[in-house]
Length: 289
Image (cartoon, rainbow, N blue to C red; front, side):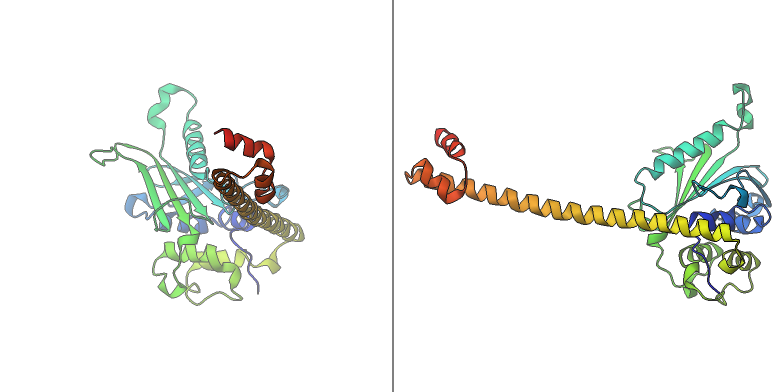
C-alpha cells in the first residue's frame, strides 16, 4: 500500500475538495481554526470541487468553501509548495475577492460574512517559530479586534517538528498527515479509529486511482521536481558567481594597493603595470591622484 503525497496539487484536491467526502474538510477546518460551540462547522459546500473531468492543468490547490455554521461564513484553503515570498499578498487578494463577491450592490453591506484564509505552506514565511499562526486586524493601542471580517491562518510545515506520538490534537494530526502521509506503507494506529483520517488515507491510496489521475499526479510531481532543482541550481550558480566576483574584486583591490605603494617608491608606470597586471592608463590615473 503506497500513499500519495498530500502536498501534490491533485492529491490535495482529492482529499479536501471532494464534495462527496466533506467530513474530511470539516474536520480539518474545525481543528485548524479551533472552532467550538456555535462556531463549529456542520456542513460545507465546495465552490470548486475536485472533478476528474477537469484534471488537465489543475492550475492551483485552492479550495473555496461555503461552510455552514451559525454565522454562515466563508473559507479559502490553499496548499503552496514552491517558495513564494508574495504569498501573504496573495492571501489578501483572494480573501478580499471572496468578500467583495458576496454582494452585488453596496446597499447589501450588512449581508457580508467573515472570510477565513487557511494557507498550508511547505516553506517558512514569517519570523515566528510557531508552525501555526493566526493574523487578524487589531487596534494597535487596545489590541481589540474591532474589524472582524478577515482572518488569516498559516500552517508552515517546515516548522512542524513533532513526532506522531506527540500529536495530541486533531489539528496536529492533520498537519502531520499532510507532511508525512507519503512515507507510510499502512495507516498508523494513531489514525485507525478516526473516520475522517481513515477516509483521507483511503483517498490517497494510489492503487485505487484512475490512470489519468496517476498520470496527472506524476506530471505535477515531475514539474515540481524540475522547479526545485532549478531553484537549487540557480542558488549554487549564484553562490559560485558571487565567489568568483568576490575573488576578482579582492585581487583588483590588492593590485591597486601594490600599485600605490610602488608609486610611492618612485617606480615607473611600465614597471608597476608589469608587477600588478593593471593597465598603464590605470596607473597613470593613480599617479595623478
